[in-house]
Amino acid sequence: MRCFLSILICLFAQTGNSQALCYDLEKEIPCGGTEFPRQEGDYAVKDQTEIFKQGELGTVQELDKPLLWMGCTLGKNKQDICKNPKAMSLSAAKKRCAAIQLLNRQWRLPEVMELDALLVLNAKPPKINTQLFPDTVAAAYWTATDSVTFKSKKKAWFVHFSNASIFDAEIESKQYVRCVSDMPAE
Image (cartoon, rainbow, N blue to C red; front, side, top):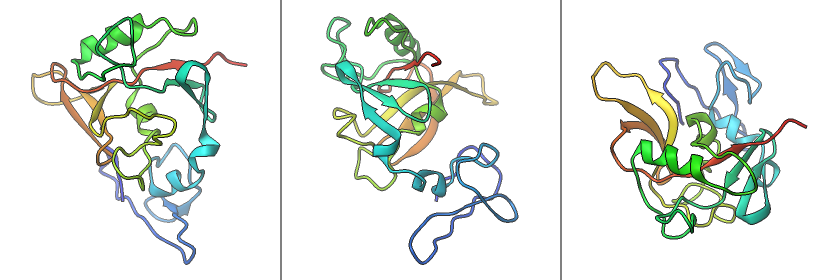
């Protein structure tokens, strides 16, 4: 069972045919809602082939959201963005995504819920579709979502592709990076 930043009780149930269900605090609810998101049933609603499709130049289009993902982990060199994945600070990650010139798009660091949608919970590490995202490191990837803490250190959330966890880290720590671009409205 997975829960995200919630003091609410998260419940998980299996029916006889292994279909995951979703619940609010009192009863079963339809999966995929926004009021009680990120339950196991939300991930069982569709398989990966119904959610993503391969795009041009190594990109991956998310079909149920207007997002286009870079299929690769951001690399060391600005000229060859997909070679030799490199962990970097949050500020470096934001700058590198914004500087990418690919398909005449503006690229950015994803929000935590966007990056979390790439997780494949039942996969071996890295917990992602490695056919669509082949060079994913089984490690932490930055998001643009700030973490609110009571301490003075600035933190942001990351998604960890080795164990499908979500934690925060100090913004100067080094994590890997996958950039995303918003698709224009049709």
